[in-house]
Length: 507
Image (cartoon, rainbow, N blue to C red):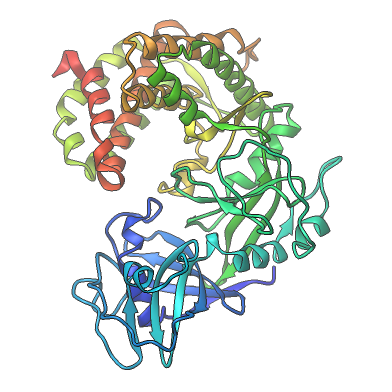
């Protein structure tokens, strides 16, 4: 490992530029400030900032600074600092204007220049006598080249690409065939950011290595990133519907929290699936058009059964009782309620509902195992070769220990059922039966392909399995309400409707 992030203050001029931008990013954890920062210089004008928020979350914000072509002109007045930053006034007031620190908003910049603003431009800042553009580096070729030069190649498998192909991006990129990916890579460029809304930032590079996708991890944790080991472990265990992991960008971090530095996974490089379509986009389009989704869901359910079988072969399993699983569901709902008034007001009916489920669930041993952890249609791709499952990091705002904890496969299925509900709701499906048929087909496809289970690994059956699945759905919907109210309040009604529907008899 050659990269090393050390404590460094974000320059006040740059902090003010970030103040209005960070709260608008889905991956930024709510309306909060950062308390400390570490940084690693990836190239001359490329810096990866790791911002530690007041909530204890470390967020990666890579930036490119580039001299503004309008450097000889006077700066415009500074805009107000919105929201939340590590700037001197904590983002509570207006940015100051001085001889050496003036922020220029993106709109002011765009109004004064004849050429289009560069991709990823956040704003401009006057630093000394130089005006610089502050750019979200994930959009910038300088970051793409620096990232590729600093990768650590994962131990290759038979036929896997080797390091030099990844680490020599300056060779003239050859034209790539149309791969059906949802981002346009300009001629001569290395990559482009996917437009799909995500908790991380994905960059496709179709001309590198026959096609790769780079996932820049916005929420950086100390410990083994699941997306590093799970995909290749699944492939080794016989599950073919997962993109292989090629390489990783890592950095040591000394932020004063530990005696020794810790390792941050900054980016993961994976196989680019050809001619692929985002699963949630596909579902929404089919729902809006009244096209039945059941056939797709049946094949997806079969693939998920295969995935869970491979996870059991690749990782250790454990035994718990069914009521222990339900108690853990109740704890997670309580945790959601602690940060969400909507859920907190329903704790009474929720407790009554869970008590009723405990009477329906036989308190017998069940097998808990490694899961996907954040399974929904947006974590899948549909291609002519079938479904592919992606992004095994789990819910990015949850602690790593939670994401790695074993549980029942029913929890993953509940996440997919919730995603089908989202697609039907947001697409305003004209066919009232669309949602029900898709849900039923997913579960049927899963059940038909579970295969023979090891008798030493007991699994819930019949009414117990149905009750546990409903409990997981409620838990997921409660989590979604809190998430949406923070990140996308316009969508909060979708999980709220689900909570009310599940709790209906107890309200």
